Amino acid sequence: MRSMTYLLSIKNLKVSYSNIEVLKGINLDVKKGEKVVIIGPSGSGKSTLLKAIDGLVKINEGEIIFDGVKVNNENIIKVRSEIGFVFQNYTLFPHFTLLKNVMFPLQEVKKLSKEKSEKIANEALESVGLLEKAQSYPFEVSGGQRQRAAIARALALNPKLLLLDEPTSALDPEFVGEVLEILEEIAKKGITMIVVTHEVDFAEDVATNVVFIDGGEIIEMGPPSEVLVSPRSERLKKFLSRIIRKRLVYSK
Amino acid sequence: MIDFSFLTSIFPYLIQGLVFTLELSIFGFILGFFLGITLAVLRLSNDRLLSSISSLYIDLIRGTPLLVQILIIYFGLPSLGIYFDPITAGILAIGLNSGAYQAEIIRSGIRAIPKENIESAQSLGLTDFKTYRFVVLPLAIRNVVPALTNELVTLVKDSSLISVIGVPELTRRGEYIIAWTFRPFEVYLLVALIYFVVCYFLSKLSAKLERRLAIPGFFSSKE
Ligand SMILES: Nc1ncnc2c1ncn2[C@@H]1O[C@H](COP(=O)(O)OP(=O)(O)OP(=O)(O)O)[C@@H](O)[C@H]1O
Ligand SMILES: [Mg+2]
Image 1 (cartoon, protein in one colour):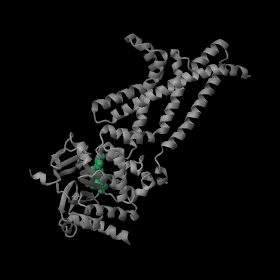
Image 2 (cartoon, helix red, strand yellow):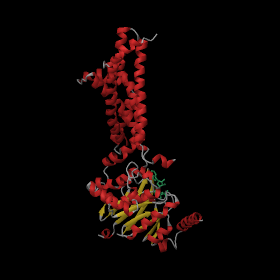
Image 3 (cartoon, chains in turn green, cyan):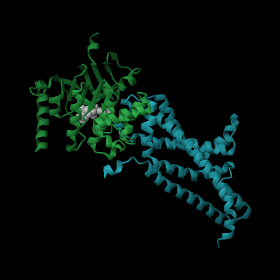
Image 4 (cartoon, chains in turn yellow, cyan):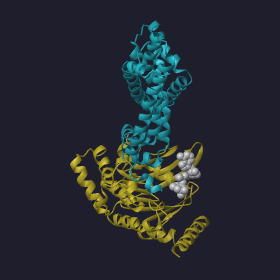
């Protein structure tokens, strides 16, 4: 049972959108506690990969084994309840307060009592410094606070795996730091996570593995000290020089 | 030329008709609302068969006159052994008709929801039913409050067609009075005025409802 040693094992995963193949046979294993950072150009299939892991897109071929079990239509609801997902934007429900956003899945998915859910939700919001915003609605707080609350909601459910799809790229630059800080903090606590991000510093500090995707394929994969420092393929070299140049422009 | 004492004398009788008008349009609207939600969800479902049944229903209803639908339900169905009293037939006709229009309104409201909101609900491990109940429909309906109240206003006006099957609603009562008094101009004007006041009032209410249901902070953050 080789797959038992991995929390997540993706085998020959292929996904198409109306006949256009956007993931062309992805193989990826993630051990418990690992932090995988995915990088790659726009349209390379990064978001599609995260969605496929959470059963949000139809898989054409291949399989996903999560926590020792092959993911299928029957167990997908349970699998989803064990995987946290934070999107670039609109993760929170805009018609619920931050508190209700965090409480709601505890009540409706974990079936906890209202009192218990409220207690956990308040603790989760406190851990990201948002207790005093508990009664605000998502669009009444800053983008950075929204993302922190989304992270709090995911963590309150005590997930085995946390997926984050460009959690800082929709933010005004002044809010990026506070979100990355929280992600670094939770990374230290041992949670397994897969993050799509172009924040190279974050990848260097946090990632156990960096995966470079281009054209729906994994081109390079390895520890950040290899992939980010001495890229082998032309494509990755080009990609890295582009994002690093961008960073230099921004920091001026 | 207009005799006010005459108008005052027929006013209470017409207002009793307005009660039927409101009953037909409000119950018809509610029936249409639940039918509309069902049709919209089926139409967007991945099940090809259910989705095409829903489309077919919507196309058939929208492609035929309400008056003919009313006549089929009240005069046509009895030949299949199905009888309704005029008010039930009226509510049914309006509800079945409005359901098709409300389905299209609600569907457009669903399509305006950011995809991530829906994916995020699913990703929490919510069932499809709970995703719709707590996230998709509340957001979709907020998106289309003005279109839905507009539909209610339309129903108040269209319910005058129910007069053809003998429900003593506002228009029908106007016709009775005219048959007795031969004063069509004043009577129809007063009938029109009553419809207008009701519809005006409803659109004002709509603006209130819209403000009340608005997503907090959503518009100010965009400005
Ligand atoms: N729902 C969809 N229907 C059709 N095509 C889609 C859909 N979603 C994504 N695609 C296409 O699939 C490809 C991969 O998209 P994906 O969103 O996974 O890329 P990405 O790497 O996340 O890009 P970005 O950095 O811009 O977020 C793109 O070419 C995109 O246009
Ligand atoms: Mg993406």
